[in-house]
Image (cartoon, rainbow, N blue to C red; front, side, top):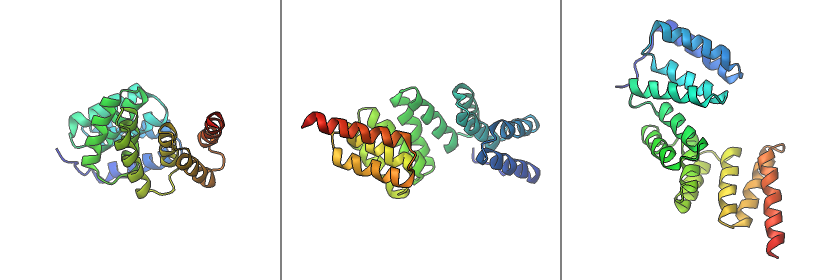
Length: 197
């Protein structure tokens, strides 16, 4: 079933919820979205947005339930597939994560965030070369994404390509000087390099 366009009033409230989400006011956004669902339990976009907000709040069970409901209503919800894939990664259930993220990627090709998460899941699911290639593709789509730079850097670090890892972490710190993950990773590269001398 394809996405149906919600009524105009619902669209305005969805936009308001989106604005609140961007501002980090997730509970307020969820409140608006739940009202919309009471009026129209089949409003897939409201379920997708609830799942996304719950994910931001790290309410993983609630995010998963909302995403599964969205998929039950619309089997082509790439957002729901992405969220379920992300949750699979959170649990280190790499096979489940890969399956959902590959489906999300088929439904919404060339989305750098979906491809980044897919690359990370592939790499950690013992498909290292495919994971690195996929992470490189995500980086080509969004050259200045600190998350992609760090994920790819960690992948190269684990593959023992210290020079490439260090370059990626340095780029991350150029973009985001306070990035704690990149700082830790630079220190880890330096420790590994010293231990190998």
